[in-house]
Length: 470
Image (cartoon, rainbow, N blue to C red; front, side, top):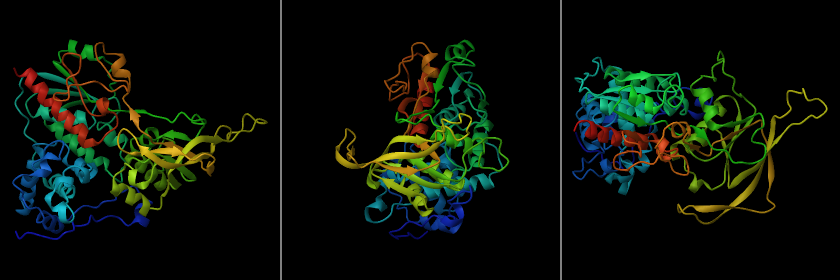
């Protein structure tokens, strides 16, 4: 196949902004076969493979792209599947631009190869064409428990199942997938895609038990008593952070977690949903990360006029560029270098039964300017005295991060955590201070990316296998 020396990657087909802003169908439509072949031809097949070192799960990227060039799409999938348990998910939500694609040689003089777009194409091709179930390995006689069915838990479970371990995943909610089902909207990651990946793991022999809250329904110590030889904790970071400003207890103030869970997991966006959620009106989303973009774009699709308030400038905005551009195209307003200081509400002391009492009416913000860099190298936002102003709104969604839920820590003796509540682990193994217990993903780091959580799940699975197979 002739090399494609174009300096630009093939664009991702997508719904038009004026159409997608009113539906929950997937925005990005994916490459067709001809486009995938054209993009694969841009890969130089570097022997040094710098892109692989940028991938947290070390997918053999040039090898899978070489299979694409040969039109061996199933072979390409099998290469990816050797390293990743969630190819169709990663092809959609992984920040390739700051990882594998950031190290692509083609990116030195133009766009890098569209590695993520090719991964999505290959995974979708497999899901559309594969007819044979994965071969279940012979049991090796060992039993491992996984707490949480998010990306780190599913990855750990998949890697161990491929080696013959009897793996049981305990999930607190009624569906498996963790943040993939409750946090990421349908228009970015269709839930059918997540279910397909979960079904693949089940076919490998992974037992997934839902509605089990480890720390309440059963403790980690009781799991060991039940014969599990190791436990991996991938319980995520589902405890929302708030700003601590006046008015956060008013009706109409959501954490992004609650807002997105109601919409994504409980399908509140559907007309026949039994789960209430705010629709229409004015919505202010506070924050600048991917979760803030997801909350804002969800509110927009529910009929609202949406503004994002972020205390730094566009240059410091941490969300993926693609998500920011999509939000802007869809008509979401970005009010940068501003920060809320108070949320205002309606009060009618003459009629305490007035249903509007305690409801949000506005948010007071103060303008900011960028000062000296902080410990992470980002310029610190500084308030401009006397610059306060008020924005009318019906809803405020706080999207400034999450912390690990303290339930596991509080019910597991001997498990050390840091001051933010993250479980302390050995970086090379994921081992915790409690023998036989490993951890990874957001439960350790706080809110981070799907692919980093997957990398932690792989690290722990390798360490568990080495410990139990001695």
